[in-house]
Image (cartoon, rainbow, N blue to C red; front, side):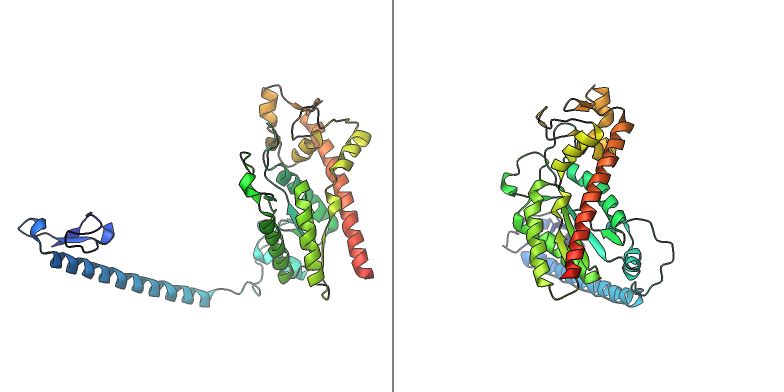
Length: 328
């Protein structure tokens, strides 16, 4: 009879041995070692042929099933949405039907947001810019109206070869721009005609501007507006607003950390966990640059007002771009 063998890569006759699960040997009344090599090779060849035939039949069956399934699939472009749409502006959190219907009902604007993963001191996560964008993207899209937000580009540009800071991942500038370009082209193909790029990290701005300029020139003869909104990246103005309107006079360099009160307060509107609030309270470290982040309710309210300030500046800049496009 035949049974499975875990022999070496080649038998003594020099013939190749099949993978473990296909190796066969002949077990007779005499030791295996005296089985003529030709019999062993025949058995192995036979096993391989049987396996190949089984795989071919399996693939054929799978292909047939896939074809049959494809023939029976519903056309989602024509399928009536069976449930109410969710009140949400994030494309990745909507169903395909919800995005489809939003486009049909007049949603023509999409935001492409870029953040980053980097060293941000002992309290903030590496993804602080991405947490900021979660609250800023929601606020800006709702203020604009008829706007959805693409998935956040969470990796910033830089040199991957020198990204030695633990947790700090980088795209090359070429990859970064290719991602932005493909996202914008995809959104346009779906029917979005107003596409705006906003970056929350300083290193993101150049690549976004380059791609927006390139595509704006390519689409010059079409009713499509694409622009990089540099006014969104306004942390200098945020610091001034915080001092003059909130009464918080912060020196961001005081503790030598890549962390600020205004960033912390904005992120806490997403989730206080992202600034390690409870752990800092337990360690008596609930402050940044000499400014207490307690009570948390006050800091969250400051962050809410900063979100509103940045939203105002960004939406005004987008309206200026649209006015200029209509006048051209």
